[in-house]
Image 1 (spheres, rainbow, N blue to C red):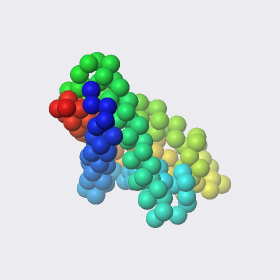
Image 2 (image 1 turned 60 degrees about the vertical axis):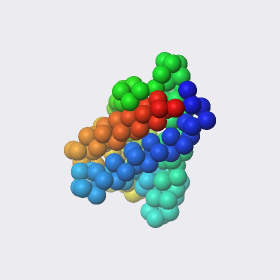
Image 3 (image 1 turned 120 degrees about the vertical axis):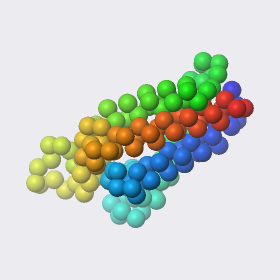
Length: 158
């Protein structure tokens, strides 16, 4: 396993995931703005939040790349299809558990139970992120499959 290359490949895979998510947003398939969602944890200013969120997403992507690399090392091989399997598990946990629970810890994200007195500035994503559009889960699944594919290909070629 290429332990020296995981960081570079993690950046490439995260860039690919981000490109798919941005393309889905620009195509009107989702209203999910991942850099804004992540960055607004740190600041209420939307422009600064997008910058902070972009860098936070890169860091998180690196963490997942390390996890994928460890799984590939454990299995003794990295392939495109194993990467996609990991991507499917990753997005299942993200959409099924992390996204719905995010409102409980995010300082600017409304919960599904927020009343009129809520001072939250972002709407809750809901289960599978469906509050950001019915195609949001599709875009997220495709993006995470691309992430796993990119890592599996890059690490398997070394």
